Length: 520
Image 1 (cartoon, rainbow, N blue to C red):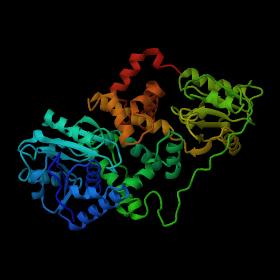
Image 2 (cartoon, one colour; image 1 turned 120 degrees about the horizontal axis):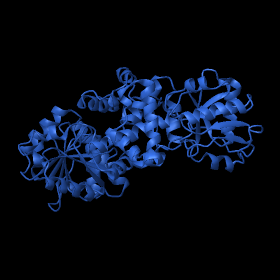
Image 3 (cartoon, rainbow, N blue to C red; image 1 turned 180 degrees about the vertical axis):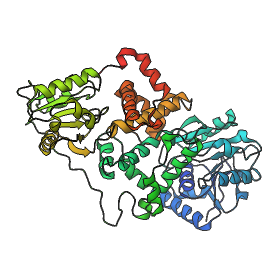
Image 4 (tube, rainbow, N blue to C red; image 1 turned 120 degrees about the vertical axis):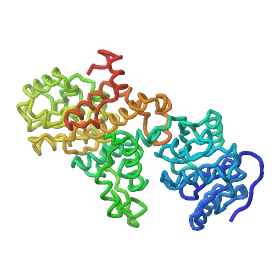
């Protein structure tokens, strides 16, 4: 299988040769660290070795296998300075491995667990000296992803943290130190990305592909939540959500969704089973969105003042759609929020504009079912996600209960002329991107209020560990914390669920900025 390595430098032990264990081993071998990899299953160990051999050969570093020792018992860990446990995500199994390791390892050996959601404090308590227990959460693929979360358990010593951070850096990773709380940073803050997407699917707002397109090509996520769940494994994602829900004694923000459970029960787990939210038959290609080319044949738009459609004026000017008078306008557009003054603007535009043209209303904080009650011509009312319109490639639209096919058609034509692909959703509170991004910002705000990590650390972790286009705190500040708060209050009002309660830290930010934060 493999050979013993040189005695110089840190000797890293890895328990578990599965996807994460072999990935961590590969990162260590790339960094020229001696590695001992143990797995009780010969089949898993053989697959892990094949994985290492394949990737090292591709990199022209096959000689690094000489720094690897593979074994089937923990006795091989006796020479290691640090050990990373990467066995399946089961608390009792991990505690048992830690207990067995302490009888085999040196007294100064650091014991790290690669758990993604479980309590490091509970795992470390299996040791007689829990001060040397620490969390070291890698992200898949471990040899590629730059982030490593270093989790300080209740008993972890400063020297253990220092040694673990040093190891992460020697592996070429970007370590962030985080408190031991359910989900740590990335798995915690990412929960709404999946949870709200599943709720939107369950509410019938749109199908999985449309929701993915909106978040990928509208909000800038590298991969939509349903494509990502299929890649991770729907069962794995459900287990993470269930673990978070149980550890927080039923916090509604982490409640698993029945759609996930149904997929798991029917064996549709994503790519690994050939089907999940998508089908993965041989030769089946992912459908690409049919993005239109922008046109300069756009008539004047009668545009109200407001700050809920950033970049809209520049977008209109770029295609020659200058704002016009009420008599010459080809469409009306209310760009403000749901304050009483904005509702009055909507009423005035409905009275003054010709009844034959569409009237757009930004819909991040109001449903079209509600807005249709405010106007005399609800048949021409079209909701739009203004917050993400200018920056994305899609225009997310929604209808009210009386919107006519003619108004819908004109709305689509206008969006295509602006170079945006029109995607329709069924009047969901908060639309799609505003709702999910607001919940991500809110989760980060809760984490800040609970001292999980500082702002910069939270942002760095989500950018490096989850490939988000922006860190949630930076994103919330750019969109405006007052708008995030307004969306959350809208969701809480519509659903009546504690799930959408705003974090105290977020409310304090809005209060601190006073009238400046409440504008628009």
